[in-house]
Amino acid sequence: MSIPATMRALQQTSLNGPQDMRLITDASVPSPGPGEVLIRVTAAGVNFADISKSHGTFGDGPRPPYLAGFEAAGEVVAVGEAVTSPQPGTRVVGVGDGAFAEYMVLPAAAAVPVPPSWTEHQALGLMVNWPTALAALKLLGGITAGQTVLIHAAAGATGQAAVAIAKHYGATVVATASPAKHETVLALGANHILDSLRGDLAAEVLRLTGGAGVDVVLESAGGATFEASLAAAKRVTGRVVVYGLAGGEAAITNWDLVYKDQVHLIGLNIGVLIQAAPQIFGEVMGELSALIAAGVLAPVQPTTYDLADGPKALAELETRATIGKLALLP
Image (cartoon, rainbow, N blue to C red; front, side):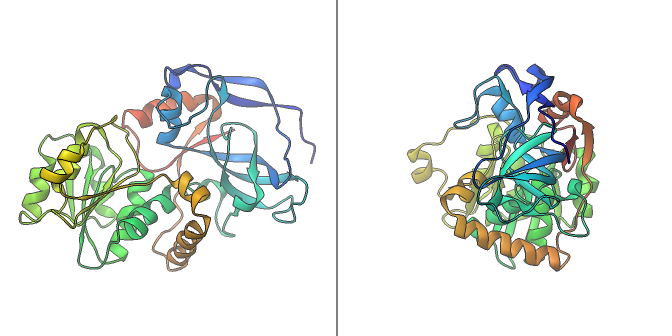
């Protein structure tokens, strides 16, 4: 197929948030270098990390102006030097720079084939949301049958996967979400659902657990909820896995850990896991494939927006107005 010289893309022009993301029509189509492939983007995933980058709060994030987005699925249309797989025509999903565009470059080794019966839309999340949920629960959280897990933002793409995975491994799930999303979360199998907006989350979790607290907390809310997460975890053995800060930063000191919150505090960044421990990430992906084959995780259709409506999609995600996975269509 013919590859154009320029393309439509969303460019972040400031660090004032997604409202300063602009659609441009003359972005240069990138060329794949050694070990890379060029894909024609069919669907790009929208994530909280995109919001963090637009505000300049993402660690080592890009400086504006930059092409936004990092997760996409589509068809390989060109390959760089020394690339033997995937070949042009292969449908893949992966993470890279500039996903909110008509074309993007991916590392060939990290371009995962879209499952044969899935659409590219449905494959979004395979490299970000689902591995994050599994790594947080099993690899770092060590969840086992009979334990109890607290999952914040349970109606989001990562939260929904976490509920399904935790239930599969025999855990009791206490989930949080805004009231309008409670039915969605309960349908996933959550045992208890709490209003994420209420101010006594820790007290409610302790009441549900007979004062013991939960074994694992999946903490992505940040802000004031972070303190509730620490208070809701079991003393000494409780694990709090932090993989997001949607509600803002929160502070904890060594004094807190010694005298107030005696918990295991664990940080997770799926991008760092991929780069720093590729073998471990491979093990996570292997287990994820088994969960998909067993029907524990089934493909879901994301809520879609036109590429030009990217700022709207990000704004709705930022205000917690969405459910499940969001995608932009170039």
